[in-house]
Length: 491
Ligand SMILES: NC(=O)C1=CN([C@@H]2O[C@H](COP(=O)(O)OP(=O)(O)OC[C@H]3O[C@@H](n4cnc5c(N)ncnc54)[C@H](OP(=O)(O)O)[C@@H]3O)[C@@H](O)[C@H]2O)[C@@H](O)CC1
Ligand SMILES: Nc1ncnc2c1ncn2[C@@H]1O[C@H](COP(=O)(O)OP(=O)(O)O)[C@@H](O)[C@H]1O
Figure 1 (cartoon, protein in one colour):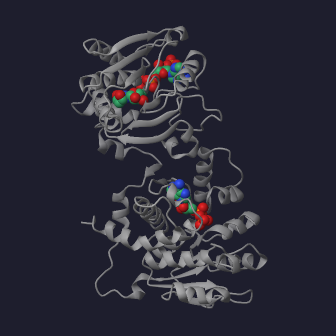
Figure 2: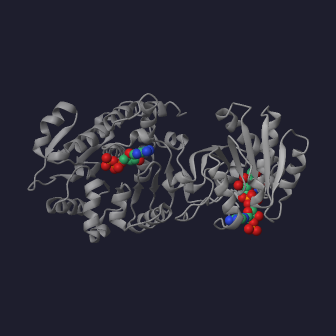
Figure 3: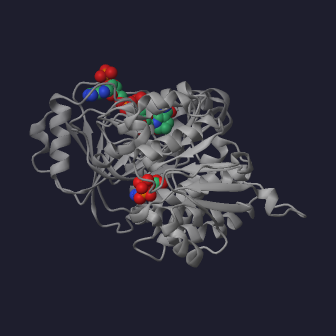
């Protein structure tokens, strides 16, 4: 992002001070949607770098937009000021904002505020907070004001391993510029900021796109690009046959949910390879899905007739299922590997080298750590996922509120759709069914994973507009509708 700032400044008529003005305006636009009351006491804390420069410009723009009670606190603990900070300090002089300087902690004693705007340190943070900075931040957090952070909460590292003990600003919301910081996608960031919003500040988009980065946020346009319309004269054979190997006596629901999602995501044919005890439920709930009986003696006679095979949801961990997984590996055909199939691999790590290339593994955090070892932070976990995806030549879809699709070429696609209403059992089974469906329809493993993640979360988002909780079967039923909405964006 720094390079993009520099490029924009050097190659467009935009100067760095203009860019700062854009950033401040974008911040105020978002802030004033949330905080319409112009009489609240707002304290803007500004460091002396560019983050502080943003803070000064924000205070001025808020004041000229009608906010009445703005106090600006310049944090002067002996750091050098940036040029754009200095310009904005001059510009503040003509406004109604009251300005104070904090040279030491003695100066903060009587500060009170309803709202704090934190512009002390932003993306320039290069070491953990200590000394006066740490104490000041502690004081601000204790004000119990609603804190809005500018670009990054002070003390929060935008990328890299987050320190175990976070001692930075506890923001209600961070309004960040142009692109989200990678660390916002990790659960550890919830301490630093409850929410974040990305606002456009006019950085050169072409340049950002050309920059080398292994991390991409999945956008609707990506999903639209991947999704293919159903063609004239096509028939069920055109959309592939998916085999769902899932379910057990007590966990038949997993097989049903997975098959249901596979159906609604458009596979031409779906067969559930489940124990006989599931037959009645399958026929009752999903008459379109075919049945293949599974017991310890059964074999998949003709694997080549399936364009996609998913294995694992509710399968159970047993020697029989371990053998089943080994036989599947012998087919040397990409698989969608979820839940107990991953747990079986966790218990038999030697099997990993036999996973067919281009398979897709869909672990949640616990399954991931069982398979690849315990991790105590998400940054490392995602790095391991990347390494393993490259080494095993598979896609690893690490599931969470934000899921990470780690491709065999080292790229990571971050999915932003989905919400806490979806935090209920069976949701992952649905995702597996959707992926299997897309593989059956001939999408590549990476494309199928990206599209499935996006549409799964999008379905959850639509349903969460009117429901506090969204069940897995609701999501499965919504998929086809979401795909139809998406295809409408295709030119
Ligand atoms: N570029 C642009 O055009 C645009 C940039 N924008 C804005 O700029 C922000 C980045 O600004 P920035 O690079 O000036 O860094 P910033 O976060 O203000 O801090 C700098 C100072 O922090 C210090 N420091 C570091 N760690 C520390 C610690 N632990 N404890 C104490 N001090 C510490 C470090 O000093 P040092 O310790 O290295 O001597 C340095 O002096 C970005 O977040 C966005 O808000 C927008 O306006 C859009 C246009
Ligand atoms: N808070 C959330 N926000 C977004 N997605 C969520 C959230 N909670 C769960 N999900 C999604 O639901 C799925 C849960 O998967 P998993 O834990 O394997 O479920 P199960 O094993 O019950 O089927 C994942 O795709 C995950 O991304």
